[in-house]
Amino acid sequence: MLDKRTKSAFLSKARHNLKNPVNAILGYSEMLIEDCEEHNIKIEVGSLKKLNKAGKKILMQIESSLKISGNDNLNKSVLEMGREIESAIKNPLNTILEVSMSLLNENEILNKIDHFKSDIDKILKSASLLEIELESIIHFNSFETDDLRKKDLNSGHFSMVKDVIQSIEPLGPDEKQVKVTGNILVVDDNPNNTELLKKRLSRKGHSVSFANNGQDSLIQLMQNVNHFDVLLLDIIMPEMNGYEVLKFIRNDKRFFDLPVIMVSSMDDTDSIYRCIEMGADDYIQKPFVQSILDARISTCIEKKQLRDKEKQLLKDIEIERERSETILYNVLPDEIAYRLKSGEVHIADKHEMVSVMFADIIDFSPQVKDLNPLNVVTILNKVFSEFDLLAKKLGIEKIKTIGDSYFAVGGLKGDPIKSALNTISLAREMNKVCKIINEEITEMILDLRVGIHSGEAISGVIGKTKYTYDLWGSTINLANRLETTCPVGKIQISEETKKLIGSKFQLDSHTKDIKGFGEINTFTLDL
Image 1 (spheres, helix red, strand yellow):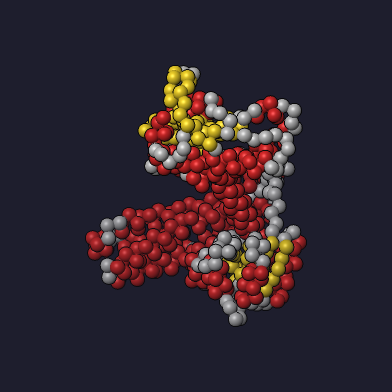
Image 2 (tube, rainbow, N blue to C red):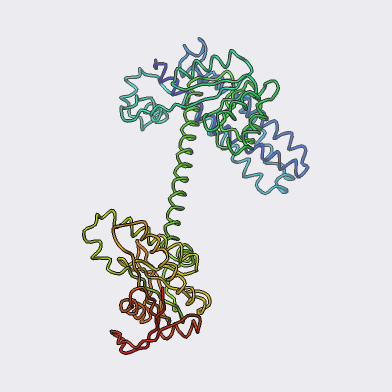
C-alpha cells in the first residue's frame, strides 16, 4: 500500500488530470448555450444544458471520490477508488457522448453557428480523454513507497506520478522558504473567530490586531496608516459589511495597495466574483485549511513588502533626481539645463553681442600664503556666494571662478545695451560687498579690479559625466587682459563696451598695448 502522503499526492494529480477534460466540456458547452440563445435556437439549448449538467455531475463526483477524507476512502486502494468513480460517472459520461453525437446531426444549428461542429468535436475528444485518464488510475498498481521510488517513472502508468513523487521529496537546506511575517488586521463579527485567528497567526510570528465590525476596522486603519500588511475581512457583519469596507479601502489612496483576503462562509459564485471585482486579492471560504490560509497570507505580505520597497526606491530615486536637477541648475544657466534635460546632446550657440566681465581680488595669493586652508576657503565662499546673488539679481550669468577670479557674462539673452550697463552695475555692487567683508575679517584686504569687453562669443556645454558651461573667443581673452591691466579699484572697459553704454558714466580714456591685441583704446571708471 502507498503511504498516506504519497497516496494523497497521487490522488491530487489524478483529480487534476480528470478535471482538465471536464473543464473543457463545461466551457465549450456554456459558450455554445450562449450562441444558441443569441440565435434563438431553443431545442439545442435544452440539449446543451443537459450535456452541461452531466459534466457538472462528473466534476462533483471527481471531487468527492478522489479525496482521502473519512475512514471509507482512507482504507481504499487507488484501484478501488478508480472503479467506484468509473461506475459513478458512467451514466453522465454516456449522456455527454449521446447528446454530442445527436447534436452533430442538427443541420439548423450547423448552418447558423460556424464553429458549432468543431466545438462539439472538442467536447467528444475531451470525453474520450476523460476515459483514458480514468483507465490510468484503475490500472495503476500500488507498491510500497520505497519500491515505487525505484521504478522507471518514464514508462507505463508510472509516468503519471513522476512529478508527484518528485514533488513530495523533502526540501533541501537551501530550498526552504524564508519565513515571512507581518502586521495583520482580522475583521470578523464573531469574537470566537477573531480570537482563534489571532492565536493561530500569532504562533506563526505575525502581529495580529482585530475588529468585530466594519466601522471599527476602518478606525483602526486610519489610526495606523501604513502599519498593516494584510487585512482578513469577513463579508456579513453588522453596521458596515465587508463589501462596504472593501469599497472604502480601494477608494482611499492611503490603503489602495493594502492586500485584502476575504474570509467568509458564503460560497456562491456571485459573492466571490463581487469581492474580486471590487479589488480583493483573494477569497477563502470557511471552514478553511489553516496551511492554505497561512500560505496566502505569506504571499500577500511578501507582495506588500515588495511594493513598499519599490515605493521607497522610487521615492529615493525621485529625491536623487531632484537633487541632481538642483545641482544642474546651480552650475548651468536655466535654459541650458532645461535643454540637457530635454535630451539635447550637443549644445553650442553663437552670440553676436555679449558683455564679458572678469573680476579679480588683488594680491590674493601673497595674502593667503600663510593662512589656514579652512580660513581661505571660508572667505572665498562668502565672497563668491554674495557675488552669485548679485549676478542673479541683475540677470548676469556667472560662468565660473578661476582661482580668485570671477568670470561672468551679460547679454546671452536680452538687450545688449541693458546687459552692458548691468555688468558695470554688478562690478560696483561686488566692490561694495568686498568693503563690507573687509570690516568683518582681519586675515586679508579684499580689493577688486575689473575688466569688461563686449563682442561676439561662442558658448556651449562640454564634458560627459561632469558638465561645464563655458565661453570661447577673442572677446573673452580681451576681457581677461583688460582685468589684468586694470588699475586698483577701477573698472576697465573696451571701446566696444563704451559704445553700448554711451554717456551713462564718467570715463577716463587710455591707450594701452595689450598682449595679443596690440595698441587699443581703453576706458576706466571708479568701482
